[in-house]
Amino acid sequence: MACRQPLTPVLRQLARTTSSELGRQSSRAQTFALARRATKASAASTSRRCFSTTRQRALKSTAPTCQAQSKDDFTSTKYPELKRDERFACLTPDHVAYFRGLLGESGSALIDGVTGEAAADLAPFNSDWMRKYRGHCQLVLKPSSTEEVSEILKYCNDNLLAVVPQGGNTGLVGGSVPVFDEIVLSLGRMNQILEFDEVSGTLVAEAGVILEVADQYLAERGYIFPLDLGAKGSCQLGGNLSTNAGGLRLLRYGSLHGTVLGVEAVLPDGTVVDDLSRLRKNNTGYDLKQLFIGAEGTIGVITKVSIQCPQRPAAQNVAFFGLESYEQCQRAFREAKGQLSEILSAFELMDEGSQALISQVTGTKRPLESTYPFYCLIETSGSNADHDSEKLQAFLESVMEEGVVADGTLAQDETQLRSLWTWREGITEALGHLGGVYKYDVSIPLAQMYQLVEDTRTRVAEAGLLGDTDEYPVRAVVGYGHMGDSNLHLNISTRRFDARVEEVLEPFVYEWIAERQGSISAEHGLGLAKKKYIGYSRNPTMVGLMKQIKGLYDPKGIMNPYKYI
Image (tube, rainbow, N blue to C red; front, side, top):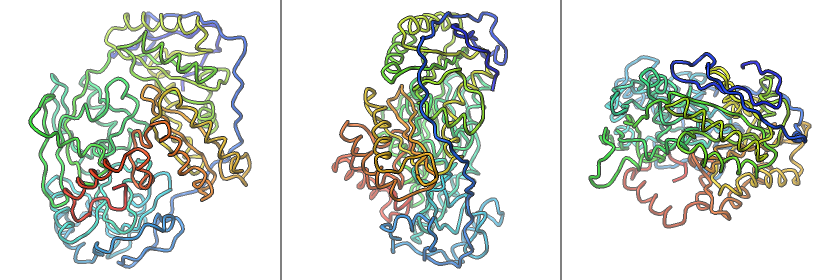
């Protein structure tokens, strides 16, 4: 974290960071006079929290069987209404022998818990990072080519073996984790960038490429990946497409439904769908690639992607503001859209509770001297540093003169730019350090977006579940998200998972959203967590059409069963 000088009524210097100037202060930095409000915002009360020492436990050795293990932390135990589909076969040594013959004997291509002990190796594939979901998978397959994926799925389809595709396993709704003894199909070995056109900006890559690796590859060539996530160091492109991940750059570059040019995918029967177009315009019939984007691996496995990547901005600026109310946040966003328009690339909202958690977990000095009920992080990206700085200066002077922003700081160099972003991107990790988390990724009309956090906090407190001591299961209720996309991340931080908490939260949260014509899933999908709540965002006709598509492409139902469709 870059050191922060004591704040005066002057907003700190702004570095017009260009691609050739990253890592040093801009010589043309401007200083903007800001009038700080006389009355400081009262800090949101922050309970004293203890670090969680809970560690992921490995599965115990089991014989090849279809019976669920009677452990409380298994998904099948937590959700007793879920029953293993009797149509599916149980894994046998003969099945394992076939896959060994296909993939080879290397441990990097297969993890076998059917014929031997592999509990520790299987554990990361059986559980999500939040420790909420845990399956009984006894076999992980790691193909290295589309041909191997095709052979695997064809064999599984013929032998009625259920399959769960898995990328970086960074999801939040249990979509990439097995429920019973499904085979996990890990795409991590398919991690090659295949081609890049430096004129058009078209990137073609395999599904197992890590998002951050793709972005770094593009950065070396003057381009940027149109998607950015807090989990970019672990998540994979195939998983990003399968969940239609949104992230931090959607305000500027749009969703994957618009930036993806083509995909290669494998259907459950082994058919390879080669729709790996490199063209922005291809108006020849149904745009079938869109079916795989956001399908969460329920109709096939994405193996390659072709995506349009924009030129990397030569100048970037980041500002971090403290605001007195959510109404002021809305005013700031409206002004940013009007005054910054084409250079505005991100507008992120964080409440005081979320920032207090980061400070507690990391022990890092906060960007602003005082605390405020709300914070906004604004990023601008453009090609002309002088032009961008003039526009940003006018915006800053405007919101300060009108009393919209109470206090703020601007990044002076790349180090400070990255440091300010950690106060937004680090929230998820900080929450994970403190125990369990109930996460709701939702879209709500902007005017009412934060009201959900306040109403949820009130409901949990009135139920006697929210408090500062260990007798209360809930530590805090916080909210943050992509204000530019009306996308809220409602997080309920818990000391332990407690059935009473879930009963208070669900279906309350979904009913609240449905009443305001919002969406129960903005960017993480439905998975298992929202399986029974799809009706709050989709009417029976739409759900029926989805089931027809599922039945057409996966008539035996082997792809990612027990999830939302």
